[in-house]
Amino acid sequence: MKADRGVWMQPHLVERVGTSRPIAAPARRVLTPRVARQVLRMMEDVVIEGTGQEAQLPGYKVAGKTGTAAKPDPDGGYSTSRYVASFVGMVPASSPRLVIVVTVDEPAAAIWGGVVAAPAFQQIAGFDLQLLDIPPDAPETLPARQ
Image 1 (tube, rainbow, N blue to C red):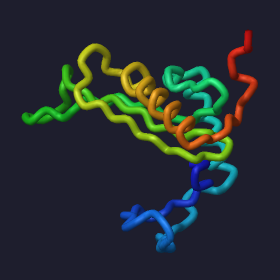
Image 2 (image 1 turned 180 degrees about the vertical axis):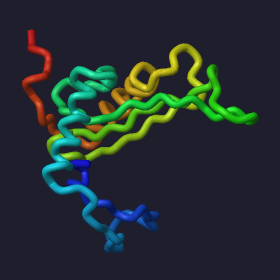
Image 3 (image 1 turned 120 degrees about the vertical axis):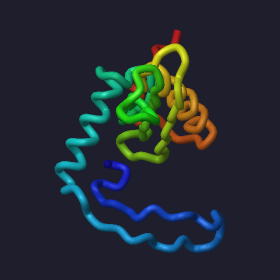
């Protein structure tokens, strides 16, 4: 929620990136700023001490949410053997530059989003942060130099 501070923006396709001016998408406030900050803190806690710990990135605050869902059975109800695992996160959480969604359809070994999808988020985000030269927002979490 911090990415837009509680303001919903209508999903839209981007025709091009470059010198053209982007078209403003319709938007409306769906959460108060106070509630948006509370949701962000909860999403940071998911990564710090909850099910999303595998998404942690040294030097960065990460906010995210894990997901594990049983797939519907063709005959009704839900499967007990087929799942979708996911993790959605934003980084750096103090001023988000990246929002990344990782979805794994029918994972093989484990089924939980925090085990299957969060590590993929960590790898993707780590690469992108370096590629885009996005500075850390939590330098106190960097490993000590030897």
